[in-house]
Length: 460
Image (cartoon, rainbow, N blue to C red; front, side, top):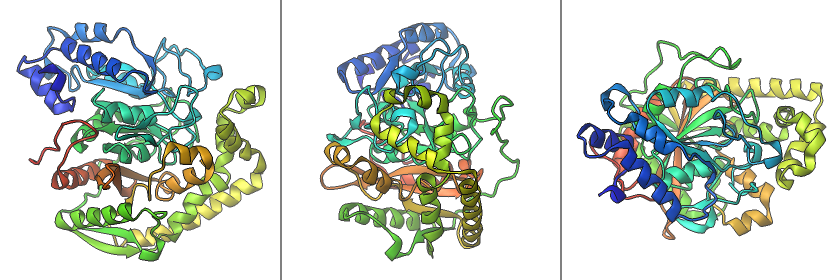
């Protein structure tokens, strides 16, 4: 039955190849599901012509297009031609003439764009609460935050509205909402996915991220979306030879006194379960010193990179600051504190921390960290928006500064039904290898994906 169809990519492509479904059937069902959720703050713009996209595929061969008829969404700081890009700030809105490179590549692969999703304004936040278009909720409890800034993109996948979505990730925006919604969030190596046509938050650090129901879908979307783009000055080629993660591998874990769960005992217990799963699939635990990573994380909002957020929207900030969400305005205005001297001092501090971390990479293949130490209610974040947001970035804020890649995976549910996440972190360009290891972990864990009935496939 169409209303129970799984939107994971393999299921849809199999149904298309067997002529059990047509893209028009799937798109009709997607819009029915979206309507049934009513005003859930997921979407800023729905594309009325998605049906036409589906009809255009009718009669073509599903084997000719790797994403034939696959519905997806993009965060509304990523350009789609002729559609407004708002970055969740209506006064900032503009209508681009050109579609972002990464989106165009996915459309050419046969994917069907459904619409553009909500976010923390200017991609500044890990909570999903800083948008005039409303606050998304975790799909498991309306009282709890969805995570951000890619809030709508994560919820759209977790709720079974699209097969995959694009977000962005500067400080954890593609990982935190994955954890809070029981899905996979891939944060690629900086520059592997083009940022041409993406509103910058911190231009030197930003990444386009990928949300999916499983790791094989994340790997496929990454493979199709990546590639050098001369229009993006930060674009990078993936080297031809990348170190694989062996079947027997070493994973780094912070020392016990460096772990922080902010009083969430259940999250701490589920993290231990996640580490045991890694052992079960061939991993060996190695304690590392988390201090260099923690110090690097602090640089993101207590160093010169705050000024880069201001640089991204400086003219708008100078002329229309009152149009910016108060918390976002407070954060970005801190960029005025920093001088050029401060910037160079921050660069020097970061290089020293990278060198310290490089010694630890000699002992491990990956790092395995909680995606977040805890989760918060909307009311809690409303009462203390800065501190709690900082807490959520404890294990995420350093990753782009250190030029690492990461994949956020589900790691089980608390007794109250809220999910937790574990993140595997690799060195630059190990994106595909992380997806493969994540697939092994996810298969071992089993269960369902997001808040759908789709089971994690046990077969490799």
